[in-house]
Image: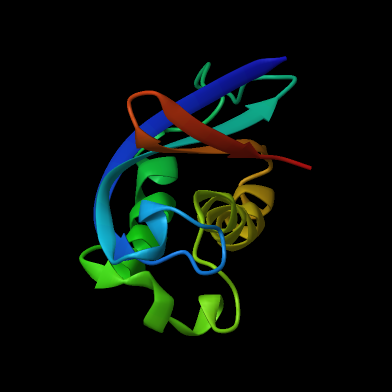
Length: 122
């Protein structure tokens, strides 16, 4: 199995309710996002996929999140905009694009700091 991973960043603020501690107050992160796609074979050019395609799909979603107060976005209404839910949002938005390109979105990883990450996959 081949796997291609790209990495992008975005900055956003959020407030996590009912969890206790400092994260209940307004704060922000410089998030790092890794998006991985996989397939068992390569295309005629010897590539799994062009990196640029995965980067473009990812940036289309990140543009909706970058420099935003995540709690105010429709996707997070009634839910904490946690890194877990950010990873799920990215996965749900990118997976159809990957399928059209005949690859599988294998994993989305969101880093909210250099020491803390979460991954979402099926």
